[in-house]
Length: 435
Image (cartoon, rainbow, N blue to C red; front, side):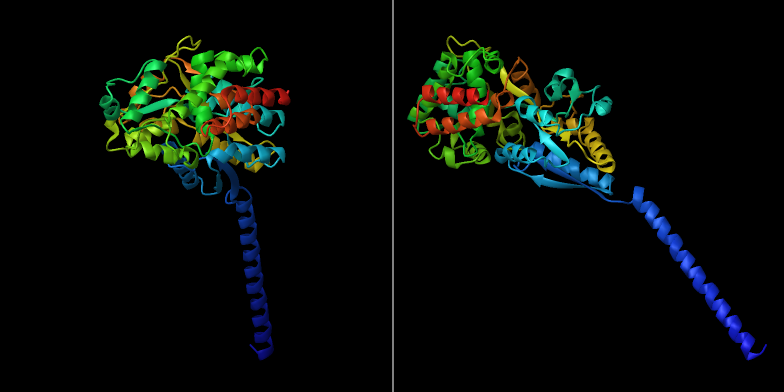
């Protein structure tokens, strides 16, 4: 073969090789594009939640999110953790600007209504077969508006549990917790005389006095029909029974029942103050039982009780103030891929496994699931204490704007500013101005 033919052959072979490389490259590009469109594309979902404190349920929730991401590597949950005291305010602000995250933790009743009215949440009726067998209608009702389900709850919270130091109470002659308000006040006075702070309070975030105290103290005086009657304008916050409930905070303040730095201490610090033996009582949610007793080597020295009966009160003294909490909701208007990813997360996150893990750690749940064999030994005691009827929680029924006025006023009472009568009037005016 002459040099000319050899040269032509080399050029042809080169072109063939180049064409093969180009074709292969195009083929790879098509495959990558195809896979990226439906299989390997990463979808990021923004989620806002209030799970920032060291409570055991918060750790369970965050571990559940991590497990979801592990099992769904193409879905990222970008978390925005907001302290509980600021969470509802931020949620309202974002809602007002139609800028909710893709997934939100929401509360039932008064907090849910404006989100639904603004068409900001996606109805999830089509997904309900995932929960109807384990969640009773009563647990779902607070997140259902006009037949549309907007969220599913993760836990049942009783906000009014009185944790008390058995040794300190025995020291003043009480082997059991006082069952009447008169005896309760007697115990407060005797604890003060013995040099013991009667009640540990961390009210810097303002919600404890409103939610954990007034929810149940108010119910003892007014009965459970009062708050719904206020919404229907058939009762008022200035009614004598509710004023008497506010007067309890005033009386406890004047007796020096609370630690002097109560308004500079947050709720977790208030728990620690009690756990460290610096006070005889702490009033908080059932979730706190994990810190007080379950995960505490000295847990056995602490008992649990409910606020005692009050003379002439209209409420049932065995009731505990409770609410289904932490509903998981999806923002409306997500594109098809994001909505599908959010629905997948919701079905995974709120599941029988989640409920069993919460129970295992002593958290009360609204679901009908078997109690694991390794569940906390204190869980049965908590279930017995809170299983005799449920009173409404103030801020789950009353609009947030009114709640804010009450919280500010209660904090003022603890520094001896204002009177219960004046506060009742302010709260009623705030409610009237909304309507």
